[in-house]
Length: 125
Image (cartoon, rainbow, N blue to C red; front, top):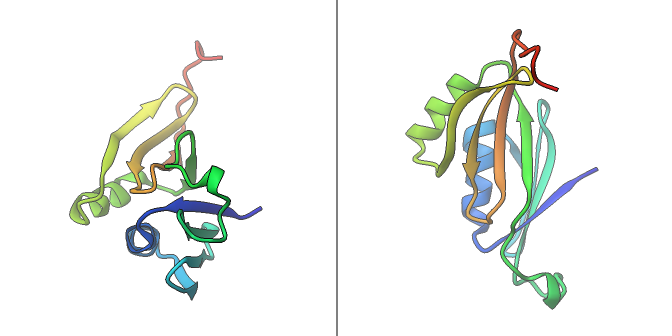
């Protein structure tokens, strides 16, 4: 499966994945970017108003979370702060054994940077 993000700002979406997560650009044009990472797989971004996107779907993104699993969220969080990314939620431990933080991409999608933790709340579930 490949995730395609519809965005108004290809450069911003590209920079988020390249600068924070180390994705490499496979292909880039003025309406589309394809990126990949050995650790995190593939992701692409289309210009939302591209002629290749049906008019009915050229709306801002809502309801999409893209998760990247890492060993430790803290270095990524510090890097995100340094890059002045839009932090939607700072790192926090979740009761189901995960630590995460959320970044809001200019496309409207949330990028969830998560790491498993050893602790799982026995009352969760």
